[in-house]
Length: 614
Image 1 (spheres, rainbow, N blue to C red):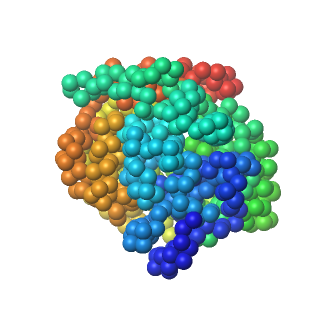
Image 2 (image 1 turned 180 degrees about the vertical axis):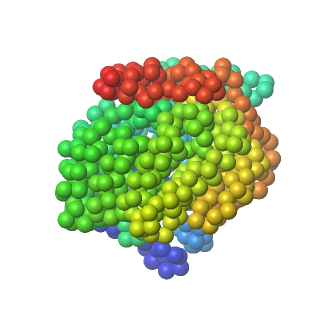
Image 3 (image 1 turned 90 degrees about the vertical axis):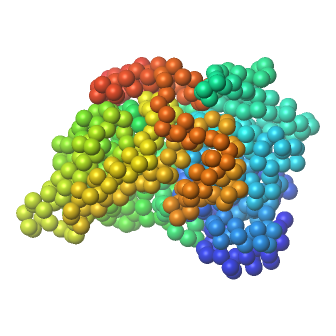
């Protein structure tokens, strides 16, 4: 156990000490001495971000439901806390028992964002755990990782003992049970890893070798031992109604990114947007029943005291019984002043009926995502909405009293022209005109439209995985093209940092050779790279030069369709043949219909939704 007086002394010197004390409502503290398996769950970012992640609440409660398992939380200490910890030589500890992370059986990372990778190294260092898996023996915890970024695990493969590819709820308990059996019959790390490598969805990097061509591309990846698969198949929850879903959530003492009950309605997506990794890797679509969602909502509101229920999924308006669900929620919670919100809305007429329901308690901000400034480019990315959809949805919103609209776009999409980019300004102005060209009595509130543009990052397992990212200079030129064209202070334009997006692309499409870059960048002080105030682009460029890595090779280089990609050894269900076909259709500006209107043969086997909406 750590010196609690030392911890108290440190907490008096940092902002937001509640990030580090634990003891929140619905947190679970067990006697670790009685536990057979101790799991430290780490979200490699600051507490407020990590506590807003639904996956944390699921795994935390799932593991702790087992009498002889304990799951405790750990986050990245903020800059001030890290400084004090290093000064006082205080190791990284968990929130629940204030136990040294190094004393746990597992340290599990969720990989939500590539630019958190230096935080992972920082956490290992603060926990006094060697970075490289080859340097760790039996006295250190097993380092595991999962989440969307695990679909290209290679940039951090040297640091992680094994990855879970896919949805981890069911396999996590299987892993921990297997670990318990190994401990009971005599522990041998190597024997356990060989055993675990045989499970579906488990990737143990040390058992695979990457062979490169002279030009730096990959020739092949091959197993080094027998008994491990050539391809790692993702694991998937088949029935969301019977899967474990928490009926309690930890309620933080301080404000977090999402202070609300989060209801996950379904997994997967049928739209096939060609830039969207989540829409491909989480296929097929699987829904929870309205009855199960109502049951969870009632228990979660009662057990947390939250006054808002957020309906969360990749495209929430696609839930097949959304109107019925929202009506049921409003009937249940309207008198209790508990609101219902949707993170974002599709630009179609169906959204209007949904808005009529959710506005009964309180008006939340409205966010729409056209993604591209022109219909031509929306067809390229297969967005499936048009300008008429925008006019209909926004007109209704203004009529009902909304006056502030957020619009999300991307710049740097494949085949994009300056005309497409300037369409961002045109759409924003059209929204403004729709507001002001109304009868005087219908103009309610102070109007503002905020258009935000992120820089397109090609991601693995999307039809655009072969595309070279735009250069930083081109991103900036296009952003300023829009910015300089806007001459109205009621229209606000923001754009994402192109330098940060460039680094994100390097790690999104990288291979094992990037581990030395991560170590070098961390040594030079990089951490919290996803936070603009802490991202040091010049430091990253220095690190790239010092380890002799060409960032453009990963980020801006166009891939050939037949190139072996670093993540090709993973099987997400969607076939590479289908992705290539979609890429070719994109270049031609051809669209692909929604899966609900008929199977498009993406490669998913036994799709539970096949034929359901035909």
